[in-house]
Length: 161
Image 1: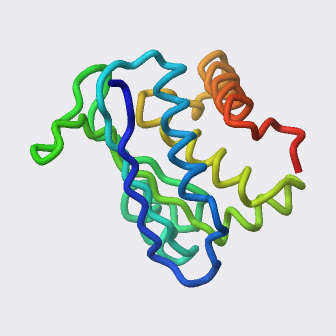
Image 2 (image 1 turned 180 degrees about the vertical axis):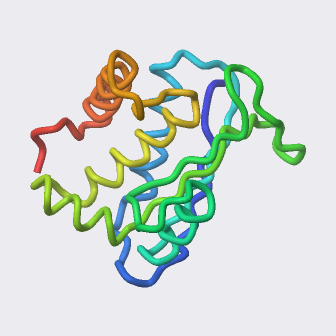
């Protein structure tokens, strides 16, 4: 069976996590796996933090001393991911989301926090699978197209408010 085990940890108190977000994020992860036609069982860890914590992580791992919306920490690449000895699932990696930043961006882009958290999760899982947008061009376009495919698949297309 192809599926994703999603472990979600709320390590912030700045924003109350809306009801149903955990289910939505699991749907996002599973939709990415389905669209990427991956077979097997996978694991993704998602942690909600505040702006200060994500700023610390951004500085430590990217040498950028400011908050960001999301960070992705892949555990492997291609088909080469470590296996969790307890579950046998391949560990794709960790996703860290600043919920404070997500609230700001939802307002900025005029959509719901629900859509923003779903988008950030989708974006990060694609990073865990090797997608990259940092240099722009065709790779960034492919990633953006995939993000919107997933968001549409889970019922959160761009125009939903």
